[in-house]
View (cartoon, rainbow, N blue to C red):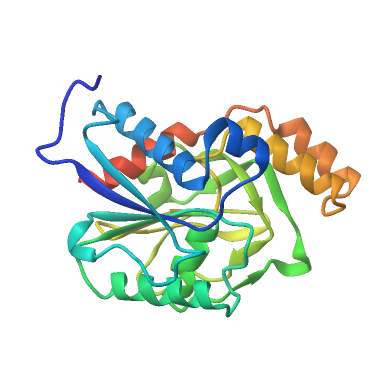
Length: 255
């Protein structure tokens, strides 16, 4: 139970952009459930009640491109990760980008994005999104070097350790966005606009078990060669800053 409460529950619509692998589905549920648990843990870390202080709804935007939350009914949107490409011109991705553009055109609803969601927000802000140079993967627990703004946002830390699972990137920071951090293979590791947008390229909502299953699956499929797989598995159990990011996301939404 939290030590304080909000006057009204924070209404967060999770835009679910993928489902997940069988092991994760059995243990944690779909990406919407994983994201909801992540946000509730962040609320608890803020001293709130993770249940009563958040009103979290989940919207499957992959299979239903018509039904989206009305902006007057939500305070914030959380865009999940996905195995799909944020730069593809397929119907559900185009509909999602257009919806995010509508959100950006108003001032009430705030945006939070992780990985694919981070890239979609970048695309909606006219930043180029595509494969990283050489198609290099960034996977497992990796370090993100924070900018001065990022250090301020994330409680004085100079770097974050986050789960990563991507080879697509936002190539440039959109106009008006504060850079939060970078890594050797990805310049745009996080975007910030006070009272409007916060994103990270990583997967702070993931657990070690979720990452292990993805690594094992993609290795067995030949997506990851032995070198990538073994190096990634060697880091997957490292301490990570997922809860800190969850806490900061919630603080951003209630500030």
